[in-house]
Amino acid sequence: MEDPEPKVKTGRLAILTDSADLHALLMRHVLRARGRIACDVIETDSLCERGGLSWSDTESLVSAKGGEPVDVGDLDVIWWRRGNNFQRIPPHITNRADVEIINNDCRTTLAGMLWNDFRGTWISDPHATATAENKLVQLRAARAVGLPVPRTLVSQDPKVIREFCRSAEGDVVVKSVRGCTGAPTFTREVTDALLGEEASMRLAPAVYQECVPGQDHLRALVLGNEVHAVTIHSHDLDWRGNLPGSFRTANVDDATSGGLVEVLRRLGLRMGVVDMKMDSNGTPIWLEVNPQGQFLFMQALSGLDLITPCADYFEREALSAARLRDSGRR
Image (cartoon, rainbow, N blue to C red; front, side, top):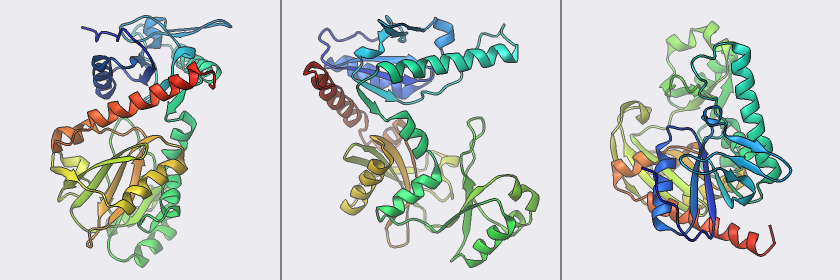
């Protein structure tokens, strides 16, 4: 059963994501129940199933999940959660050229509609999101605002990698620069055996970092100027490989909180999920930010309410953008 739309619509949010995104469906349910703004989910992987796009000089329509087409020009906020998806191609279409055309033309048409006709607030801007996903860019931004960052090398040169590991103070870990969606890649310790795999090291760059010792991790949801965080106690080097672990609500010190907000500002992000690790002195050390990371599991495992501040944030942004629209300043 679809969630009812509010009768009075003073702001309009669209969540652009894939068809399996629980975050989007839950947020739509919460926002529609509150009734202050309209909220639609646009499944960007299902456009070819719905005949979902139609653009002309007079309208810019995209199909919403379970509802009428939405005019991009009427939107106040777009939550750019999972925007660049491949289409769910009907199984009878197997020709590679046909598949490529469907994917390219759906993605390009949607992008053109958004660039032409959307005048509201991005959460977050797609170009900024794509740039901020790059770990090299993140690390430079975190260091620039004064957050502690592990000594890091990104390389595929075996000689340079071995020298970095020899000069490191303590253990070194390795993780992928980008990874892939089909198979998660977890952080692991650099061993002598790994350093002997010269051919493998040459194939692609990887991130090598001095290991932050300890078992306490910090994961923070940053919404504008707000920081909501949990600590995760785990004996594993990468806690993601062995959930649930031990989660609890965390208080983030002002310096760290301010630093996280400033990093996202520099990266052009309006929200993000940040991973850090506590060193032996209890100081949070920067690891990375995911501009649209998962956060509902943080609430489920810690009890920290993240749905309410997230809904509050989207309402504020949508209502603010709507006021600008109504006043003619947008």
